[in-house]
Length: 322
Image 1 (cartoon, rainbow, N blue to C red):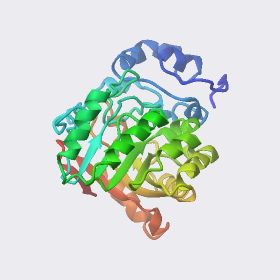
Image 2: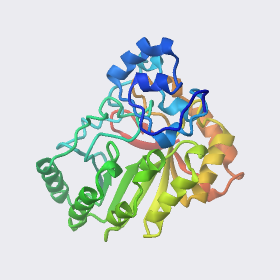
Image 3: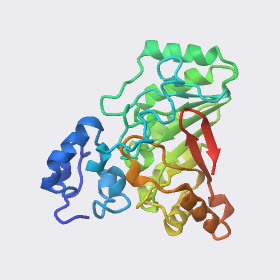
């Protein structure tokens, strides 16, 4: 931890908090204020405790940087065309047999490379009951939708009662055969992984949880214990990772991460090529390097540990394996 770093008690949500905790210098205040005016900041205590220095694999992911205001020519506000493919509020229908449901746009932590960074924030929209009813009606009216993926924002920030109500309504739609939840919560705020939450996720419809984690140090013993509450109820955990320069763009870093996932009974599922969100160029890893890393890992770690390396094509054209 940086010199003077105190035991974290609450999330850092502004530039003053970053300076107070020694994560950025006082001289950076003005530049970072402009970043904070555009993109949300939140670093919860569990992740603060993992930051050895601002430029390590954890710090780089969550500490804002003035470079975020430099927009490269190829970057776009909505690189995966969520808005263009949203027929009703909260729904994204990109693939015929799957639909995203975004019940809220708030997260426990705001990643500096997020492809929804123009949309998410502490005041991120929460779908009201009327909007949820419209979303349910859309799904019910499209029998080709076999899987509903709760994303956002982070669905596990909802109360267990509210989350269970959403899952029950989706489970009651006859043609919905599979549910999935995409989340950072088990890593970012493991205290939310309560027995009550686990019980809320124990649905009659098969449910998978996709955990976003990018570095082996994120998977602590506390994280593993939280995941076990779900796994004991038969809920399978998949792993999603973004390939990030300076964070995990080496055979050693990704190999360690994928092994750590397996030790936590998490199946590495996708390794994402970085989406072209505004101000994220500093994290870009050329696909050629990504393919080289994956090729070098093959045969040196268990085949179970290897995810599919994919790129989400701009404009909502869908994922392609790299």
